[in-house]
Length: 249
Image (tube, rainbow, N blue to C red; front, side, top):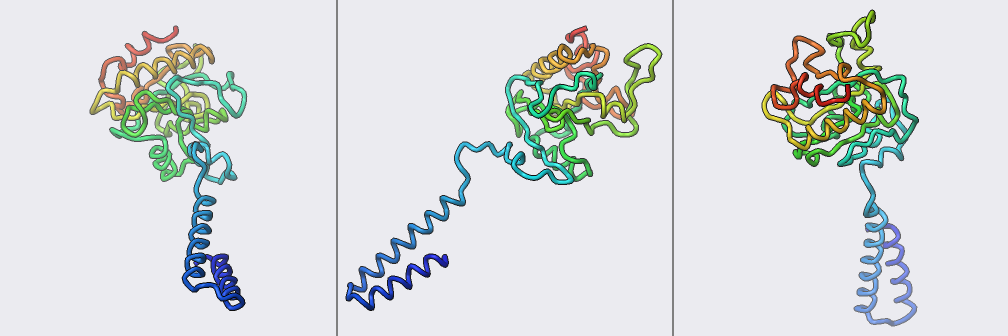
């Protein structure tokens, strides 16, 4: 029993010794007080309704290994970062990945990345497929909100061609530092991405192109960065050439 309730019980015992109240009244009064105290404690402990749990990590001290920090979920692409001005000169390319799993959400991807030793979600944006996130929902990760480099290109990756004449193709380090990473939930080798996903991907990439001055030839698919990985499958609009033809030049 709660210590405060125990004290209330003792007060009622003392009161009963001084005044001959019926024993049943004392028992029922103590029971009512105990119930009220318990309900009050539960009310205090319960979280307020309407609190968006995706944003609770903002209230914590940032640990050495960061959490998602928070992730905003929208149905229309939002590219303006909330925590710092857009670093327009930093971003030179866009890289499109898939999660490799048929279902998932931002929390699942972040757990995978933390287990791999990364400091939180490695992508800047995640687009759901209706299995874990709503179909076409766009999650904006903490790396984009803070304009931080991504963590999505391993050491074996490099851009398939240079962005400018007389420059070397982007290395893995450059791809992480200078490219915007977008992840589609799903496995493109086994199943087509949804119409909503591909539509939102196209909208998001076009918006980033317009804002950052990134040309279509600087939009890469994961499988183009290394010959050892196919990735993103052979489905519909997600053929690299077909997709780039729909982008801003």
